[in-house]
Image 1 (cartoon, one colour):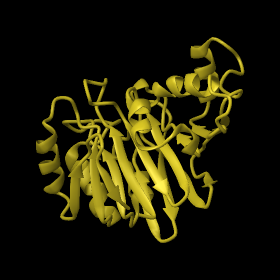
Image 2 (tube, helix red, strand yellow):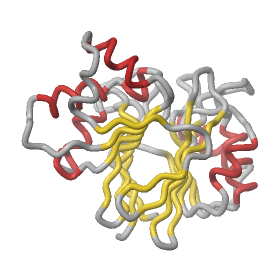
Image 3 (spheres, rainbow, N blue to C red):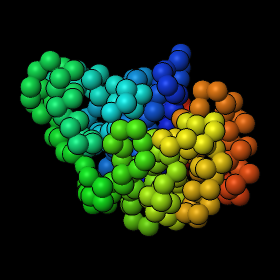
Length: 243
């Protein structure tokens, strides 16, 4: 597969046994990106790739269920000097926040190549074009769109309904989208709203993740499918799909 997605975890709002929080492994030809580092995902990542294989880490926002395992990754890399340094993309201020948690100014930059992202940034990871899309959440949050050759992957991050989601996902072959709300609210999508985004964007396949704790995942998928007629799956740890 020239481009593939592996779900490392999508549990919310905290990990459970064998159910890590949000994290995804995106393989794009020779480039490997760890997308979001929720608790439990660092261990799952190592089931699939070696630490030396990671080219980049994408942190969509600074809620712990999406970034806490960046601390575990830092601990691994700082104690393994032979590893090459991956670039870590994150929202404005992420470096200072993680330095504060580590209790040392400059700690993050001594281990990772750091980059803050802004809305509309066009970036390169190896031979892959990626772009950052600011979405609607309670803290600054950035969805990811990646293109390798003619294949397109889109990730909503945590977001309420907003025009940016449809633009981010436009004609994507795989869209990973959250449904962290049971009823409409500003900062997360309901399953129906996720389905509306997928339909408006004309995506080929949806992976539904980050389902509200009060909703049975299978019921959330059914609700999405009332608004989206294409292929749709529930995210689960270990699920791998071609893009």
